[in-house]
Image (tube, rainbow, N blue to C red):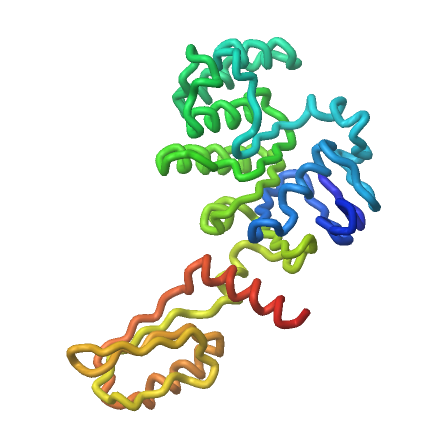
Length: 298
């Protein structure tokens, strides 16, 4: 459904994208994450045909994307971005009326269902609305014509937590109905929650393409122990070690990436063990670990 083949995009001497290749199949929900300036928005802009490539090709449903003709492909796409430009002088109701009139088929029920879900302010001019209310309109517009492919660039930008969850529910439902969604985000937790794959980008290049569940598997376990023996040392594979005073001795916290058997042997060797907590390492920590490990190999 979406394919990039050795895409490079330069702005002067700066390579915003450097030999990027990716392929997204029908029905996949793929998350796209990376730090600011990593190249996420530039990648999405080439997919949409907003900008051309310096080298390489972009295809949507087998058709080559070029800026001069990309608008012909947009009829089968849904698109929303954080802080995207919307017609400021129209009310939301007028804007949706225009979109539905331009689309093929009757999408009235879809429009009504999305309006109930996001509760947009339909009768105020879009230019007068808050950032969050504008984002609701952008998201409804992306989904309202029931497109097969939906491309989202920071889609929850400006939404309150309740609306963020409403959006994630919509993505889950779209996944169940076979839609193809490619979404960038600063929030790794929301990406891992709804996406089947997560693509990590740094400095214009893809550094990791993993199943969402593998982020936690690669990151290890978060371990905290309370011990009365103040000289306790963490196991050799521990990282991010912190030691704090505790009323009963010392609290030792670390991330462990070794095997379960190794961790079990270490726990058995701890003197005066009073308490232990082992949990999954948080997703933001998983992302940081993957990101930093890639930097060290460059």
